[in-house]
Every structure is written in structure tokens, then in C-alpha cells.
Length: 386
Length: 142
Ligand SMILES: [Zn+2]
Image 1 (cartoon, rainbow over the protein chains, first blue to last red):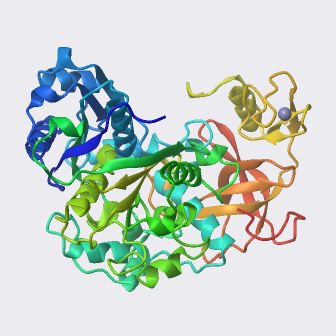
Image 2 (cartoon, helix red, strand yellow):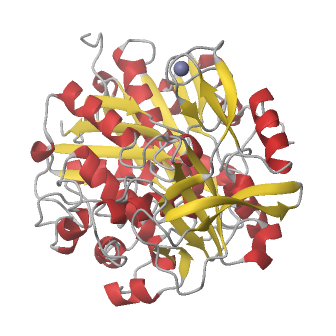
Image 3 (cartoon, rainbow over the protein chains, first blue to last red):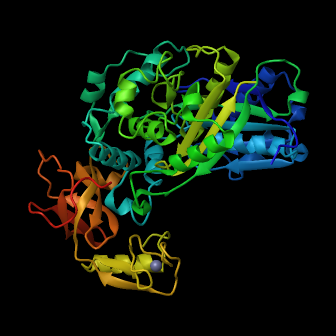
């Protein structure tokens, strides 16, 4: 169905990433909203929609509505919803924002995704929250952790393709290469494959340096009709999107060979009428090393079983076939709890504007993927420069 | 029992705690499903579900040795193994591997069989590694 209205990304904002106390989730909401409006050169009065991801720490019971009253927007909003589907939430909210503007229901939608999971609560509560993400009846009684769930995917993957137990180690190393030159990244010290392999096992085959460390932070994106913006900056448009799921928990997964990423990305590429070879860069949800390998293969950036070789040979670099996560990704730029993934979107827009730290030369097409759980919720979007 | 459990889960866990591994079988399409539920997830039938005793033999599809846990009550049990077992009967189950020697490298298609350990709420169905071929299909078969 042809859109009634055009929609573009009009403004973006990133917060700092790290230990941000005494700043709270609400400070970051204020910062991100003001920052995105300033970037778009828009007054707050143009907003008639808000989509908020639900923070792990510091959110309200009816979060988006609480954000609306906090910003003085309550009555003027025609859409005000909290999005809660794990790591896919920021990208899923972005796609919904495009739907709302293209359908004519909204003229400008604020996508807001911030969290203070690092300093906003005691670390033991954060650990308990992560444990609570596994299935209460069929996984928790056996002590499955979130890392273990990804570790099971990694073990199955390495066995299926006869790969070595160290073969995923180049993934965090390649993302760190980008973070090292990015002043906003949380982890900027050099990293080698040997250091990844030597880091302590968390849940075999995954080691410490193949797992994210959580930070505070987030950001915001404004999607709106291009006619309301006058700043003339390069804006991204949505060419196609897809959502997909094959399971929520490992206990219900009928196969570990394939996830909802293949479903959502297939739908997005079809909707956009493009193939992986057309994509100039990708923003993948690198919650763990294995997540990158599975996404590269299921989206079709490299053949099954070949992601480790593809990465080790420089496949993710600026001069490689598919630059990925040029800000350093969740593993090195930072993982902000429920807001993880919002800075994948803002980085993609910076790339389109030609303002990125690690700039892909004149990119025209980007693929973004977000996933939550253990590749449980999946959302893929193909964005085009505009 | 956790509030997340339904009637099928209560039946399954009651049996497990008493030392029996139950598998839910659809008599219409002959699918065994784990976890059990209110209907057959293969054919959709809500009226043809039955229980059968699993024979308890299978192979390891995927396994991980957990060195850091988010469960305070399991800190003393570290390291422990979590695995996905493909049962010979046809269902898959998430469980633990027990009595795994420290220097073990799991073979692809490693056979395993059911045993029970005492958990905080009764018997817990877990798996031990079998040295011999259990007749499960080889390869990782993830
Ligand atoms: Zn059936």
C-alpha cells in the first residue's frame, strides 16, 4: 500500500554512554528529547506521537504516558505507546513511527529509548532481572542464564559447521577496531583475538569479552513529514521492514539452526526490493559474538557457516563488503539495557549525513537489525539516504 | 509451583518431582512435544493430548558449561552444565548434564540418558553422558 504521506528521520540525539549517575532515566529522557528536537530544528509542539521503549531501571508503570506528562505533551498526542519487546524495541518503534507518519495518523513521532541499568540500581537487582528473562517453568529450574541461552546457540552453531571453539573471537575484536577511534565509545582500548580467547569463560563457548557490559545511556529519533522540517539536512527514509519470530525461549525452540532473524530480514529485503549485496552498511544487534555470526548468515551477508572467516578477513571493515556497527556496537560502544539498539539507528543517520566518525563512503542503503531475548523478537529495516 | 505454570506444566513437574519424565503426545498427529501445553503445537488439536513415559535416551544437541550465574542459589554449584537434549522419542528438552568430568570435550552427537538429582523442590530430571552409542542419530543436528 502506497503511503499517504512521506516520512523521514528528521532528528536524532545520543546521550553519553557509561556510568552516568547522578543522572537518572528521566534526565536522559529530557536530554534526548531536547537534543533530537534541536537536531531537527523543530519545536516540541510539532510532536503528536511518542513511542517509548520501557526502561529496565527508572521507568514508570505507564511509561509513555508518564513521559508525555513530563514533557507537557499529554493532550496533543494522538499516539502514546510503550514498546516492550526486548532488544528489538528501539528499531521496532522506529518502524512503527514510520507507519504512523506514512498513514497520516501522526505528523511527527518521537522514538525515545534510554535506560540507567548501570548505575540506576544495585547490580544484584540487574542480575536478577536478567535471570528473570529466562522461562520460569522450563529454563530457570535448570539454571539457564541469558548468556547460557546464547551459549547454547553458539555451541550448536560451532558444532553444525565444524568450527573451532575460538572462531567467534574475531567478532568483538573487529567491533573494537571501530570503537578505538570513536570518542563516544565506552571501550576504546586495543583488543586482540588472543585476549578474547584468554578472557574467562562465562558460559562456554562464550567468554567475557564476547559478552556485553551494561552502561547507562540511550537516545531519541524523530520521524516526521519532511514538509514540517526546514533544516535541509540529509534524512533517512524507510524502504522496507519486517518482523519475525521462531521462538521466545530456547526451551520452545524446535531448531537452533534458524531464528526469527531469517524471517524478519527476508520480509524486509523483499519489501524493500533489495538484496544483501545492495546494502552499503549494516547495523546488527551484537549482544554477543554469536549474535553477529547468526545475523550475518541469516540475513545473507555471507554463506552459512562462514561468518567467522568473513569477519576475520575484514568483512565488517570500512573497506570490506559489509561494514558493520561503525560506532563499535553494543560490545564496544556500549549496551544500555533496554535502550540497546537506539544508537544503531542514530549511527546509521550520521552515516547518511556523512558525519560519522568511521564514515562509510557515500552510503545509500543501510540494513538495521534488532533482536530481543535470544533472537526471539526480531525486527529488520532497510533505510535509504534521502 | 511458579505462577507461570499451566495445568500441563503442573502435571509434568508433579511427575518429575516424583521421579518420572513425562512427555506429552498428540494421538492425532503422533507428535511428542516438550514443553507440554494446552494444545498440540504441530496440528493444533486441543483434544488429542496424552502422556507417555519418555525412555530417557537421547543425544546432546547443544551444551554449555556455566561459569557465572545470575542465580544466587546456584553460585555454590558452579560450574554446571545446561544442555538441549534431543530425545530418541522425538522431543527436545532443556535440562542439565550431571557428573561431567572436568576435562570433558563433548563429542558431536554425544549420547546422554535420563537420571534424577534431588533439587530444592523434589527430584529434578537431568542427564548423564553415556559412553556407548545410544542409537540416537549422529552429528550435531542442531
Ligand atoms: Zn497433533
